[in-house]
Amino acid sequence: SLHLRHLRHEYELLVSRAPREWLGLRMTTRDRSTGGPTSVDPPSLSSASAEPLSEDDTSESSASCASQRATATTAQTSLLLPWMWALVWPLMLTLPLSMSAPCSPTYYAKIFPSSWYTYELELDKPKPLGLTLGILAVAVGQVFVLIFFAAYRSRYLTHGADPTPIQSRGARPYDFTEGLTTHLSQPEGFVLLVTYLSVTWMGNLMPSSYYSFHGTIQWKELAACLVFQDGIQYAMHLLEHVLSPALYRISHKPHHRFTNPRLFDAFNGSPTDTILMILIPLYTTANIVRTCNVWTYMAFGSVYANWLTLIHSEYALPWDSMFRRLGLGTPGDHHVHHKFFKYNYGHLFMWFDMVCGTYRKPEVFVPKIFNPGT
Image 1 (cartoon, helix red, strand yellow):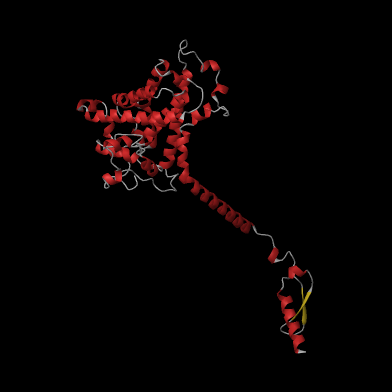
Image 2 (spheres, rainbow, N blue to C red):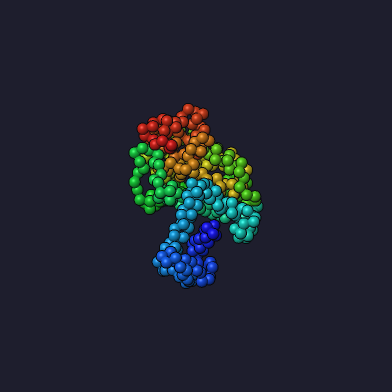
């Protein structure tokens, strides 16, 4: 009947369109040219549809997989890059944190004999271990800051984009190796600081608690040291500018030859300037905050020296917007002082300038000179 012929035709069409390798049988279909039956062998698994990939196909497939993995890695790195800068701050405290924690493999009591760090204050002279570790703590922090700055300056932390110069005329061009050599070899910089630390430590001129290895970093004392240091430094800095032209010429003027400073100009000035604006505030602060232990003293020295270095950066730094909201010192704030001399005398904190009316925000004060966002 017509109905049966139609069903058979539909069945033959279904069989003819089915993948032959699924059936594994010799199949019979109707030859459309003759109308008669014809036998068709199903394609074997070794046919073209299932033959092994050629070397070119394998290479292309591997390259595609490698490209996908590289893309995934790049995406992960892109997510991490904006936050890698944040590591520089805790890394400044690497030595005091790692050596004061009893669970750390570098805990000081596991490394050094007790005779190196215990003594009777009235009978024994200060021992050099605390001094040596303190200088090393600043040096370790400085290494991490310089690594960060080199990577940031070279666009490794900015997705390949150039960092924003503080000043609209751009950053001063220079060779990084030259800048680093100049930075580390200044007699009025680290040489004078190491001399001060050695004399005050070994001369037993510090408060007695500073020689104690007990405990770990005291965070309240650390904050107090930073605030007192910068407050006293603000006063000394202001006096150098306004007290006497003769005093200014022999002390602070050499540092002000850099009207568009770079990070490596931080300690490039004069010995008189370092004594008045850094060493006197350091010793005064130690005698105000008299309860620090050796780890807090190390942490203070490292944060202070490295933060002072960072505010001389020729580029805006990733944390600047957050710091400005909190009144903390940024390179943009300090560039205002280097450019105009009579504003922004503070270094780590802008609070004293804000209270005394000497604060000026860079991009608002002179927008033609300072780039937006600096």
